[in-house]
Length: 452
Image (cartoon, rainbow, N blue to C red):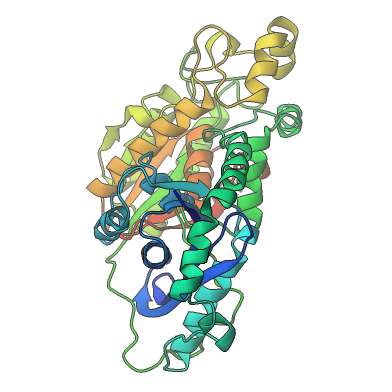
């Protein structure tokens, strides 16, 4: 059976904004371009454009060889993970597109692989050409060279005859590709700079693949592609307007005030002594409460169940006249036997366990603590539930370092090591807005001006 490679991409200049897609069908043995597809699709999001590119690429492959198996390569982790069945498809605009893509070839004849954006340049170029054409009020049309790629019946027959010879090489390449490690689950957090350095040094090759995606601009899973390299039009053509996504669910993220453990940089999670706010922490909570009252934007308050967060939340609630709702999913990581210890003390007592923990977010602290992969899944589930329940409202989430950094990182689609580049002071504020199309906007305030 003949194998084909489909590479597809899509982009939106505004997300949502003027959008287009590109797709190319390749011979896996020779790398020869067999077909190209591109189209300007009007106003849409990045993710919708990517799905439309996938559908177009699969249809082009079907036209060439209806009995082929297809290896789809895309730099959209969202599309790859959803079409592979590992992520749920939640957005109503994407469900019919995913179903359409799944119907082009019979189940089992299409496999999906995520690739870094720089390896998807052909499809990316076609998508930008389509958007450029749309800006001119035209539709994309293939060049003379591209038009010559359409196979004649004789060429198709010759390629079919050569299929047995090329399939072996394609299978060998596929086997080699399958040996690459999968990306690690989400979430790393360092309690001090020594731990950050150790964790950075021990990042796996899989995490490096995530970093490679982020540095090449692949942030679509939560926040959409950055603006394409081709400049966007300064004034959209008449009739172009973005769909009304409605007001977002905005989470104002407040880290609790200090406890006695905070300035000593000790592990302080959900499995330890549950310390109260220190005198400094109480002052911080009162100061941030006054600052939020002056802004007047908070409509609801949700807190981690741990004492230091509940005390901070109550200080704000008293100023705003609101109730506090407790959310278990906002609690800090359980650090097991490491609770209350410094990093140096953990290294001295549990060196092997610490080394394993630094090497992979799947590893849990000594004594039954939580891995950061587990925490990230918990936080993501909580995020989705709260965003759905509070659409159009501004909600204060009073929580901890790990949940806040995880929410920000997931919203950006950034790799695990990005957390090491975020400072999160006690009683600081940040914000994330979640929109109806599944995208998010991050405001990294890290605001402690209310404490001065």
